[in-house]
Image 1 (spheres, one colour):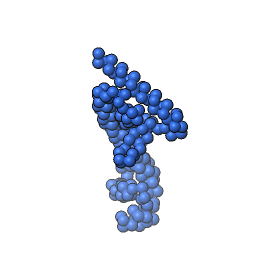
Image 2: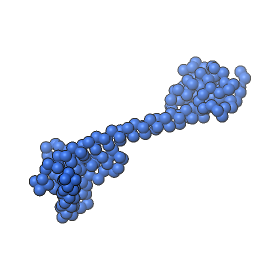
Image 3: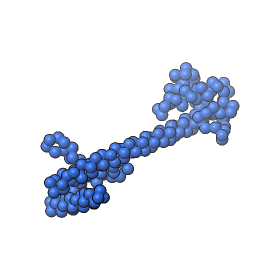
Image 4: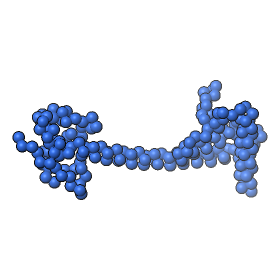
Amino acid sequence: MARPRILRLHPDRDPWERQPGETERSYAHFCFYRDAGRSRTLAQSAELLALNASYIRDVASAALWAERASAWDREADRLYAEQMAARRRDMAERHAKLATAFLAKVVERMRNLSPLDLSPQDLVRFTALAAELERAAYGEAPRTVVTTISSGEHVAQPDFSGLTAEQREARLSELRDEITRRLAAMGNEDD
């Protein structure tokens, strides 16, 4: 049997497409190999196509099957990454809208509450969860940690790891004062 002619890839065609001078039969064999996935082997293709292994090796070498299949895999990876990026953008937009709506509800509720009637922890919990959702929607690193309290409720709290008890209380006091200032400012906006 004569050795197959070396295939030249056409510059205006993707490598995984049928190339000029490639027979339909040879291209069908290549597609079978290409579509077998990343664990593809020439031996497996030869067996499943019921063809002589040395013939498949010669055709694959001449028609650049490994190179073309690799280009196919890279294109599939590129398309997958593009799809995932679009899905992450869509998800981030949905989460940002949800976080904004949730934060608006928290602010609305907080306007009706007296900050003096709430503990610093309560005020922090109201804002931390909404802010955390918004940060996550925009891809920012978390600034709070979620803990589970004895009731089984998940609570977002500022990350105070590495702080002493005094530093933690001081930070909570700062947060309470900041929230009180913001609530007062919101109340003035309504006037």
